[in-house]
Image 1 (cartoon, one colour):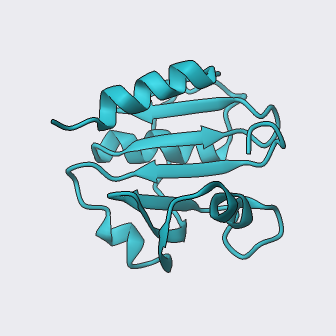
Image 2 (cartoon, one colour):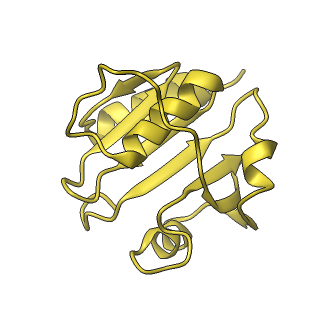
Length: 134
């Protein structure tokens, strides 16, 4: 997605349930794989602007819409996807991956904080740190 500058919003549910958003989105209950994510987020498809929510290695839904952050100090160059990612991470313990369609940069939000322009190595480290359970 990043290499092709396809914007994406991928939220991984942790302890806090995201059922409120899942119930209002397009149900999928699909395995997570590159082909499905690319298809969902390809511009022009029905749900490319919303988020997918992943629960326990399953894409539960697509086209989910999140509340935007109310923070005033968010950099102006961050768009709607980034603001929604920050917003969901302020209210829930979910981890959200954002791919910018403009730059292809990958960012991650957690606990109301956005980590910008991550390398693939740093993204993997963050996923391991936040999602690995013993």
